[in-house]
Image 1 (tube, one colour):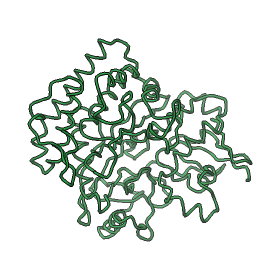
Image 2: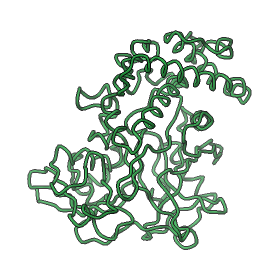
Image 3: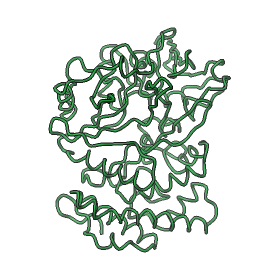
Image 4: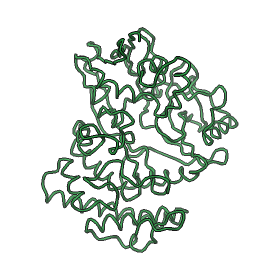
Length: 450
């Protein structure tokens, strides 16, 4: 294997911020450029790659740069076949695909000019005709190849069918013009034929998240080609002083912890190398407001347990970086009540102490979870547990009747059943509105929760 060097660029900086190298054995190394690392406005690419003069070896560099590639291997098969590359040749794949990394990063051949630039609504985008938009949605819906001449300008991770695009000020959908390097502004998620209600379910879950005070990405259900799609406003975008769209640097928790995408669930890792409470605490303590972010994450965990979202894995939580290295949790952006899908597991993405499922979350398990988050006082842990769980349950219970009136009775029943289970285990009074709802049933009519 021939050695290979690649420039690593971060949108908004004129020069490369570092170099990624592959040696003759295929091992990777990454180093920041010294002029960048010493600059006052420098930011780390990742919590797993702090700014500094020393290079990072393969063990550290590989997971981060692997996470820049698409999560679905099928999306890589064309370039792998054409160029004769293996899936573990991260640098080789980025040589061909690194200009399209999601987010503010790009990985390019040494000396290549930047490929990402701010986007001007008037110059850098072409509106999609209704017919072409429908063709794109139908292809994503059936998981077929996109219409000829259509390329996703920002390939996205995850297993759902989706495409990145831009919504113009007049509401039309558009794509960046080839060669402009302009950012997209939205993600369009398209359900497959077996999950036609996913858009409504996720929109309702995100609406509940926002109503309960969580910073949450804006979403709207957009019917296209008689399919309910979900349009998500990207949280990693902003406007500069000229009104141009700019990318904001972000990374998910897998990247922050130096984990490959394959280890995004705790059950797939091992102690010291997995997405667990110890790793979560490590990430939160690296933010600008550790106490506030821990409180937010604990509330998020309780909220997800109650709405039936068991898919809060390491790639569904992210950090936002500002120039100079300021770090904070991103808005919530992928909140789906997965327990509404009988085909998905009820196993939690990360354990609550030893609890792997909602029904296993006892007082002792949640107390151990809070202790793992660094809350040392037993009295404080119990007060926190009771106050947060009761507040979130009451806020959700108050919205159940409205949810059912809008055609989401099954979702309302799921939330009520989850509240009864969790609060019963935590020895907390269940709100009346949750006590009175029907039990949650699976599609075959069986009782899943009581």
